[in-house]
Image 1 (cartoon, rainbow, N blue to C red):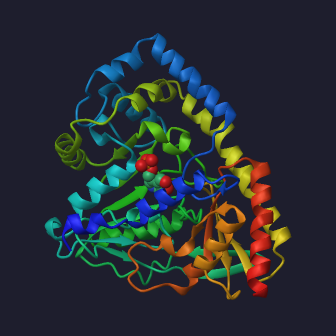
Image 2 (cartoon, rainbow, N blue to C red):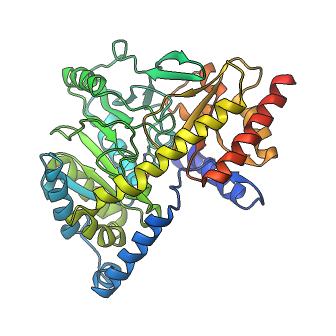
Length: 411
Ligand SMILES: Cc1ncc(COP(=O)(O)O)c(C=O)c1O
């Protein structure tokens, strides 16, 4: 199919963004659908202070009146490199590219490094475990580039289950170009353990396949992670960071950490595709990284907020939906809750539509299997909720969800 034909149809991600927009215009709809971060009052205050300071010291004016180079603001790249070195990452500014959001970084990386032009046969992108981020699905310009591996699904106890990556049967070959995973994972909150990550690294190294780690929710920032982990970037790997989930999705700032050759490739591509990334995000964030304020911001304002929301919503839902077939994934991060309605007589589409009618917008589970050519029955029994709304709204949503589920079970 030609590219114009392909993009004439809505892709999964544009459909999702459109639905969310439409939902936002419906009165009384509780929006638990999108990936927008919460409007945390203390974060908004801190952001306003950053904006005022950037205006007063002239950095905002400079950012909007100049093009940066294709790799982004040199001042920000130096400051970020110093910050990452303090986290123990062996990097310098030559390891950093700034992009217009991390989504556009994935687009560039996947199309530059994977596919038939990669010199690695088909050049597949391997997702070691789905459910995974829906936004990877349509990124590759070449068709059928993704391969998605299914996890082990384990019931842990009443209303609780977990996924475990099945790394031993993950079919890697020298024809694979990239291994990609989000950590923690959107939509499930799964945090691949340090031991599993090490095992994945070993398996990737055996075939010389680079690992692309999407840290949009993880450490070092925004650190929406409820268990510590030891990740530090290593040469040969690609780590993608973002300012979005800190509360700044509108500035569209992503950061890629990779070997200097990969960074140069990205810079050359970015120059052609967009001249330079926007400078407002880097201008605002530079002081936060320079004085380590970013860590206080994450530890005091962001991580506890989402942790509280996660624990509370879990309690509400498990209190309200007593059916033992209902379970919530034991997540260790992100601001999502992943629900499983095992063999309860309805699928995720029916649940989605009934919830919309009841005034709750969530995302049906089957969207989160990018790269799966065959349907996965399990995902059709799942639903993702965002926890970015305020607690009183989440409580109303939990009541509406339980009402809908009770109705569907009876039907
Ligand atoms: C796992 C994951 N990665 C990447 C992104 C893209 O973020 P951005 O392009 O805003 O940096 C998102 C956005 O929702 C996400 O959930």
